[in-house]
Length: 263
Ligand SMILES: Cc1cc(=S)c(O)co1
Ligand SMILES: [Zn+2]
Image 1 (tube, rainbow, N blue to C red):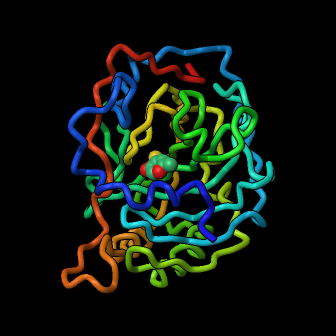
Image 2 (image 1 turned 90 degrees about the vertical axis):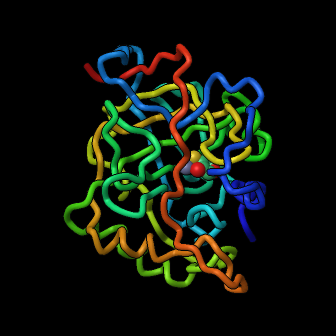
């Protein structure tokens, strides 16, 4: 059973054929974070992340990325604190990456792009009872973003990498359990930027409090090569297309302030 947090986004049209106009569209994501323009906010508290590996259920290739989906029917895997007023429940994580190591991330730091970016997607379970409800509300979602750099092999990621060939094609799904996504967070999660933004795939709703980690994690070239061996296309399609460059173009900041939790 696909957890609700992604089934509704499955049939959206491919995200890089940008829909012409987004209703409102003054808090779209991703953006370039200009460090010297970010504002230190001493009221930002440390982030409190509590993930239970037993809530991990499956991996699904939805034709844009692969989603590692969690049981979000209880408050077992949550994030709170930081810029968040409420408690948010983990429903899935996924990545965005490039065809080579020169680009792939959605956000950038002073125009610096990374080869890939992890998104841990959570929805506000204090205010809403389903992901679908939260995804259209301005305080509905919280996404933690972590940049990936090419370097030493990430031991915790390997279990996930080994499962990817089973979800090579769009709409394929494999059971995947007992994975603790906190192994994908940098040691220091106290240093981050935060701003009000949107989903980066349709429906592009302006529901996301973004929490972009200052510190990156390292994965090996070979591990990222397995991400690139995935396909956008389903097994039946004549022409197969490699799943690469699944990031959205950067959006205008439009007067928004990016706050930092550090000086
Ligand atoms: C819910 C969701 C969030 C992001 S950031 C994404 O890429 C897809 O779906
Ligand atoms: Zn994403």
